[in-house]
Image (tube, rainbow over all chains, first blue to last red):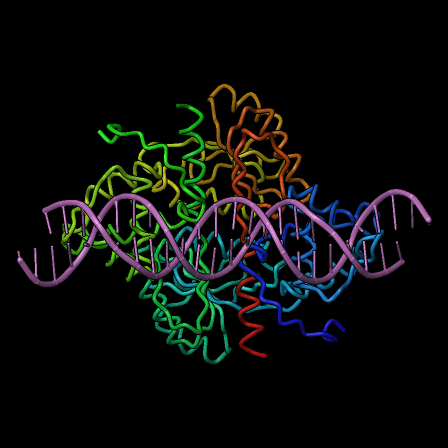
Length: 216
Length: 216
DNA sequence: TAGATTGTTAATCGATTAACAATC
DNA sequence: TAGATTGTTAATCGATTAACAATC
């Protein structure tokens, strides 16, 4: 039912990054019993500009706000969850079952975002065969066949920086279309494959810089 | 020795996010035996613009490149590690020892970035008292005293979205100056406290959007 | 020297914000 | 109706890129 109007609006990365915060805020207001909400209210609570909020909402949903009233919260939630893909499950494999890899496998929160890690791959003999959180760790040699057979399109890279490009190449050979990369490395991949970098190193640098500044 | 010139250049968030990738690339070239590197080379390998690379390098290090030659790799590495704070250890506490919290505690890679999680706090009776990766899980009631006594300035939030603001308030009361927030929530905190959001939900949305686009 | 590369100043591009008419 | 809020068009702001003189 959200398919009525397919809006080809291009959403900027910045805008997309704001979406989860909108969604969370909307859910809180719904919880509190609110039915409608104005862009102004959202903007104030998230410390954003209200025009920006309106533009963002317009970009991802076909819902129109009513002047003098605002937006229907439930409609916005439905549209946004749909847009963010929280409703349809994405199966993924993970490569690199070191401490970070194991950590991500054991994290149960991804299912809320529609991500399901179905298998992990590693070459460490000690870890292969283990099952964490219902997810089996297998040798990397089995990855290509596995991904192709189950038509997996998402790969998560949690190997050390030095091996990240090799892991990437393996995933590409396995037919993966999108990569979630936790290694602080630029990966070379074809244009049509999405590489989404999770830049924890940068986050930590931000914290470090702040502390340095405070204690100067 | 890097203190000769304190450059008050304001580095944009975007620039800071590129730093870890520069650093990794520099280390790889050093490993390969290179002594100098040009901005052009860096730019090509990371798919960036070379002027941008030069500006970024100038912003975080006092090193000048030599025309016709480039930059001394080792000098750049030293300056960048210094700038990113990888050399000095930051002690941190974590609040919320659920699956994500435990995952982060058990991850051994943060020490490379200078982060040391010294304690975790949770109210779940079942988990308090546990020790993971040398890190003890304690009741939240002990947090304020603990942080003040050990002068901890960094707090990591890994509680569910609904409890994130309460966790934030707890951390603020404990004298924390910088917060690394894994909950997809905007936190209200004083201006002088840094809130660094780790936006995994947004990353996943990016992947989801890509897949939707491919299979359309 | 000639060519490559640097660092800086100016132009471009895109995101954010301000201004304002339309509407409930 | 008057006031609040919407959506859009124009202005502003900041980051990226292009142009170019300086230098090894």
